[in-house]
Amino acid sequence: MASFKEPLIKIQGLTKDYYNKIVVDNINLEIFESCFAFLGPNGAGKTTTILMLLGLVKPSKGAASFFGMDILNRSGKIRRKIGFLPENVGFYPNLTGRKFLKLITSLRISGERNDNQIESYLEWSGIKKSYWDKAIKTYSRGMRQRLGLAQAFAGNPKIVFLDEPLSNIDPIGREEFIQKIRMKREEGVTVIISSHIVLEIEQLADYITFIDDGKIKASDKIYKLAQNYGFDEYEITRIKYDESMSLKELNELLSTEKGLFTDSPKVLSEK
Image (cartoon, rainbow, N blue to C red; front, top):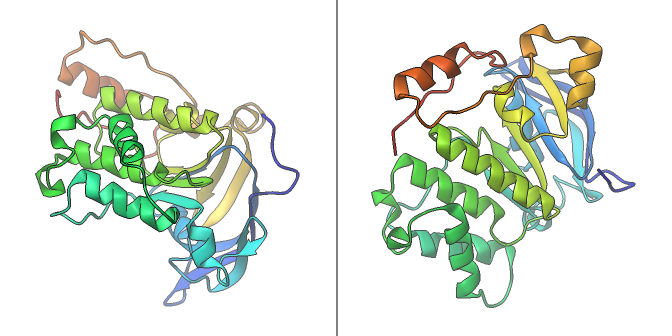
């Protein structure tokens, strides 16, 4: 895959400590145009790294730049070019899905917003049209996750961060999300994903950085890592979903499948 000569993101010595406990330890990394993944167990420092890159958490040491601009000095300008789906999305519960997307888009694009563009994001999200003008507080968890994915890509950001994007999604919806993320990557959006489940990352990422105890353990193209380092505990696998499976059978398959760090994905509903 072609990449820019200069990295989109350059990370130099990024470090964060809380009350003398180091949670991110001297990370040095360059990220080019790609689908890039931070992979590691819960508590490894992935989310803290992303929050520092977004300018939402101040590093204790080190620096990071986007498009050659320092995140601490140019955070406002940079954020207009970045989308973000946090692990736990916060919404204005009384806003409708349509109004929420209008708000998010207005933060990234100056001038008039095209209602057709907002509707295209809602349609792309997979939320039923009958819910577009209903308050978000009436949405199910899966619908909120869909709206969260839509807002991350709304306004045509150049880079999108997705923190555990497939949480709160049933297996069928998970595959749909994967296809949507792939679609945006093919459109030229650089996607940066954080996850603790290899099974998810293997289907999306071009490059992986393994993080544990706040440190980078390895970083390379996904198959080079598998071939060169022999990560048995990170064994990359695929599973085939059979629509005739019962919920119990599918949960058993997911919970025993290799390629998981700690938490086995579970079926949330039959819908």
